[in-house]
Image (cartoon, rainbow, N blue to C red; front, side):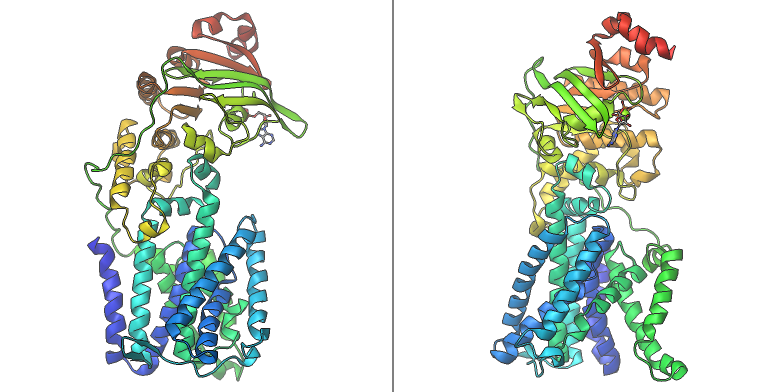
Length: 588
Ligand code: ADP
Ligand code: MG
């Protein structure tokens, strides 16, 4: 806590003291750094962490600036009303643009942001009442309880305070349930949906936060400059904001500040030096930035902050409360022996390839069902059908009496079905604890605002305590704070099991959980699965190690060529002539 507050207090002190210590020209530079930092902070969240590249942030800065410029110069209203209006318009525009563009995958999203970035820029230049490309002049001062915020020294304090508040809110957000969800957006949305996380909603929220920060920066900019025109809100500036986070560090809030500082200072120096070399020329510094960004991308992909932070000792992880005061809700287990999941007549085709055909199985609570069959038999496809990742072309799946085929993975996860993946899907840079806590996402309620204000302490403590409990239960208690990606692959699979358990499931779907485990680890896993069975959970697992399966499973289903070849107890399967011929015999 203290460690997080010290840099914020230092920043505040800088904002307060700078005007007393530095000439006003330097204070003005600091102010611009602060304004750019606000936009870059949003962009770190959106692009660096959320994985959504936007070239259009400058347009939101423009909305914040123009809204206040129009209301204060044309209608004589207070800049504070201008701020409210700017934020409100940004909220509406960002929601609309977000709903339209955020579902675009791959490079279509950046192209979409270029499109609206350009469109809004020309709108600023052409909309009647905005003064064309000449803009609007004579914006009034902001005043706060009689304090006239007039010169750069006054602004320095206002910008400093707003920047510190923004940093604090975003830092809280990133260390919360909502923040963990945001961190899945970049590469792991499919996994996140299987953990019950609404990734589309999370995307939109991040987009809106970034837009609001940009609009706030625009409002400050307008009243600091006291004139607005479209130029600073163009796509070129949108690209400069991206450069800032690339230089500073795309994935961290302080990277945004570092990037804004570097870009502003280097630009200032270059604008003094370059004209002497090139004669009079416009924006020659962009040539330099182009080269610099390419070098950074080549040699310090994460930006300069990670390089610098290697020089200081890493922060200790936040201590975990020993006991959570607040217990998470739990599901009631259905009565023993009741079928949990019944699948019938499933058909799944990938073009001409039939991956599952007339496939069916029943999984009971308090039982371990093993799904075996050679590679390519269709086991993972069946898992994807049962968990909603794929929709069957025909057939039905019933979970606790309810049809679930056609439901989204998120809806199925929220009913109590949790899974692991054959190809491990963890966030490698995030700690084991945070990865596992993702599994408990649907058991928390705290929304965005509560998370930003850190008013979800009790719930957050309970979620982390639950994650820790599951990690200790699977035997990885020593690895709580280890980045998940640095564990051996076998243990990463175990982390996935802990994550699945965190959702308090009724049914666990484990796709090759024992692959890559050593003998002792397999035994520990078998012991854990037996324990879960004892608690009433249903387990369906895919496994190739016959000794492991035969000793553990209550029921075995054998698949071949996408179809069910046989089903029964281990003894029945071992004596089944079709199985012996097709599969077991083939192996031996
Ligand atoms: P298993 O898990 O039993 O090894 P899979 O379910 O992964 O088998 O694969 C069954 C068959 O379906 C394989 O021939 C595989 O190549 C094919 N398959 C699986 N997923 C896809 C997909 N998304 N697109 C096309 N073919 C697929
Ligand atoms: Mg498979």
